[in-house]
Length: 364
Image (cartoon, rainbow, N blue to C red; front, side, top):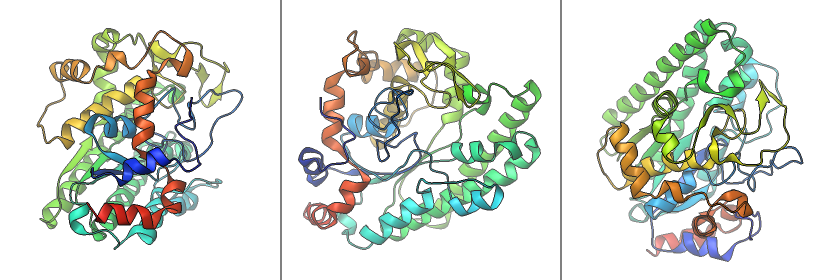
């Protein structure tokens, strides 16, 4: 099987980008990174550089919507390295959201015709690593959480503005999940969990309001969609009947059994029953739900997140067929991963083929 995260030039994936289809330009952290950094180790069986057991939601979004993907996201990325390092002493090696967008802007900014990217969309998914890096501050002092994380919101808004300045009008932004549900934070006290969840809701509200104000201030913006990570996680885990319908029965712990920040078990023989793959990141099937919601947005369908909608996307996108009974390819349907391989272009591939990508895009 061809590793779909290969750092080497893939003619198939480049041909996909060159085709006359719109593109998702992806920035952020491991929630959307399709293998721009080798994170595999002998103890953690990640799927070809992804922080999951299979494709992530940006890839499912491209697959379901018929979009190609240029992926600049990196595992471990925060919103802005300078901001985090001014708060805590830490060694940050992954390009931050700010760095990713700057790199894209320097190499591709001003090179695309406006007509060639009018239907493209920018994905931004970042923030949870900010919480992890600042956890000793925000967990011990929840009242400070909102103030710190609103700086993350500002970084996201600045990223949107930067991409708008080079011609992109449509945006998909993921908000923060419900922190208390994530296994990594299971060691928090009940009071701390409640406080942090309330603060997270406030930060997410701040993000939504900021994006609405941004769009209101400039009518040339296209469509905005805030992927409600918090609501999905909260609703789906608390009412797990729909998850059980696709085989997910364990929503409280991770497949790779963990204590807070520490791995207890080096392997996970069957991730198909789990919501979380590791202490932080969901399994590929959960990612597919997010991808389906993004696809609905890209097709300009109005929807409300409720049980009827979830039932509809399970059927429409055949989510129960993502997994097979064969452990080969980590139980993931190989037809799906092959199709995803054909539509994706990595960070290194994009930078190696700037002229070709621009030329083909502008010839559409």
